[in-house]
Length: 228
Image 1 (cartoon, rainbow, N blue to C red):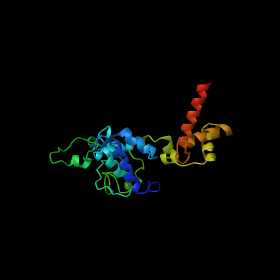
Image 2: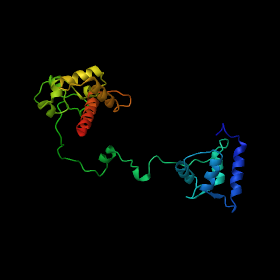
Image 3: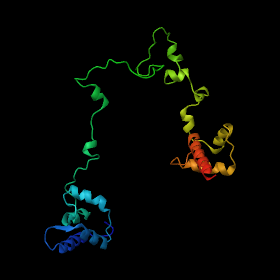
Image 4: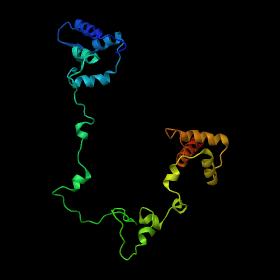
């Protein structure tokens, strides 16, 4: 607005709104204020400015304090008071943490056994230990999996030394096509390009990985089956 209006415009703006205030109450219906703003090509979103005016007690739901409204539009005048606008509603604010909950003075000690599958490497400790009846070599020879179940029944990907990062890494078209062809999927150039373009939609920068290509392949196949 500083490039469109001179500083004296805002005083004239206020006086014009004051002219419409026949009851001399200092308030005008919001439709009157908005229509006059529109005539001066001052546009804004009422759903955004009305809550802000309510914080300043310049909007009661239907009427606007036009003097204060003119004041906040004037870029030459500083606003002395800014109301505090919380980021979250009060009912959503909770300052409790897991640590504060377990460290209460009246908290009973939990003596029950911990659930879950035990880890093979004691990841919860700050220093390496040697388990009972084991030698120090087991510190380095223990498996790299996160739990014992993964050691006992490894997946096909584990046996082939493939982890989840390999499935979501950025891949080139020829690499993806080669892998899926080895898995039994044979595409024509036209169909592969169609699936590739669909897979690019799953990433903000158009990157394609094995997982997004598989998802796009399923979507294209389902669409073809529904048509047939």
